[in-house]
Image (cartoon, rainbow, N blue to C red; front, side, top):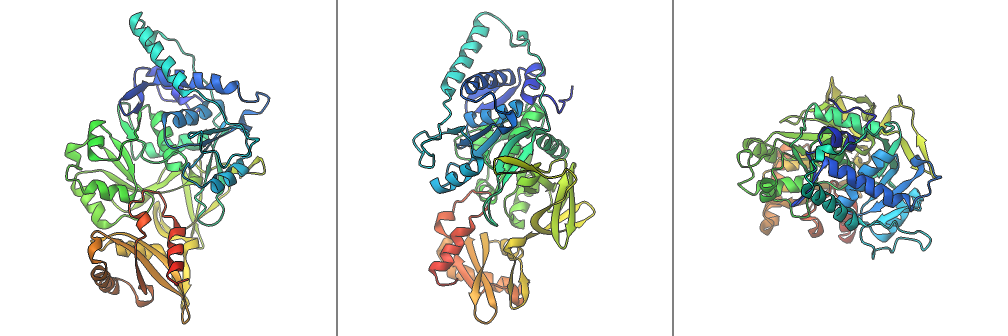
Amino acid sequence: MALLINHCPVRWHAIYHSHLTALQYDQQSITYQQLDQLLCALQEQLLTQIDLNTQPSMIRLACVASNSIELLLMQLLCVRTGWLFCPLNPRFTATEIAQRLAVLNTPYCWIENAQATDFLSASLPQLQIDFELLLSNLHQQASYSITTNIPSSAVKLAPLLIEPEQACNIIFTSGSSGFPKAIVHNYRNHFFSAQGSQMLIPLAPQDHNLLSLPLFHIGGYATVLRTIIAGACIHLTTAPLTVALLQQHRITHLSLVSTQLIRLLADSLFNAKQCSIKHVLLGGSAFSEAHLAALAARGFHYHLSYGSTEMASQVATSENSSQLQVLPYREIKIHKGEIYIAGKTRFIGYFQDNAIHKIAAEEWVASGDLGTLNKHQLSIIGRKDRQFISGGENIQPEEIERVCLQYSRVKQAYICPTKDQQYGQRIALFVLFSDSTQFDLDCQQLKHYLGQQLIGYKQPDHYLAWPLQLANNQALKVPKQVFTDSLSKQGLT
């Protein structure tokens, strides 16, 4: 029986697939029935602290935490209650968190690290949740069922209906073009996002999807719901991402950014024959042809992906190639070179001034990305706000970065504009080579290579070493400020 859109997915699987593993946290496994019990118990705790006279759609749970069972429970609870799950990056500065809390303007805030509360005003109380009690009660119930010989299937649950049109989360954009926007989705957006992805990257019960992206990012949020809707297992871990981890936990699906892929490819054991991996989803930045070829040569089924917060994650995805195909339930059009988005996965509105400002369902929204569309095949040129002019010519940084990444010794590349008296602006290239001991020689060889691949005005004037603090960066987006600060220190701005 297929899951219906107006049913809580956890309760659905707790009824029809109660014995299947829903969540694995290193060595701890939780079935769908147990996950349902945890959500019920968590809801009981929160109801004692929440004003029940408030409309569910206006109850905003701000969560300052890294990935954990606790944070995942908060996410799933909001789906079934119609509350708004508002995850925030715990690595933000106190100022950055305070700015986002000011937008959310909620009296309900849960903080993973109870001591790190510099960003809280004295009048903002913290939600008090005893997660240890939740888990201990769960273990007691499991022990009771075993000692009394009560099978889990004997527990009778009633279907739990939800309102798919009701908002269930607020995710902040990265803020690359200004202050981050508070994007609001409903469950319907995520349901159809999952259905469209399922047609290209199928998930089935018994599959294990590694949660390698943060829940405060739409990619992490979508990974959880995509997996739960399919009745598969989400795997959480605090351990480093290694081939041994993938093998030990029989991971079948995972999402990677460029840095993670490079690190895994350095291990010869990372190949399809010695892993259980069925699909590898790649996103966040450009990937070199050499790395994609290596991934294919090792027998992996990989998918490049273009996504956005506004579209509930994936928009267009490839299959063992660089050709992005627009997924079902998404609509794309190009207007004056810019990608416009619509469809069933498009967000419902922005949260500001204590209200959800909805956007008409049929309205097209500018993505801020430049691209071309040929039938259903989408090509991404780059961010509109990264484009700059040099001597009257348009420079698209991502185009140059992609060419740099085709050079075998380049691991990372990032283009910035620099001031120039003659041309107004010129090009600075930050580059990370596979061997950092011969930077000058590598730069000379790369410069020669780019001279053969790019027209003169697109060739960098300045070659700069990759900032040390980003050498092992696994963020989905490169922090632009680090590069602009580096240019400023070197007198290039």
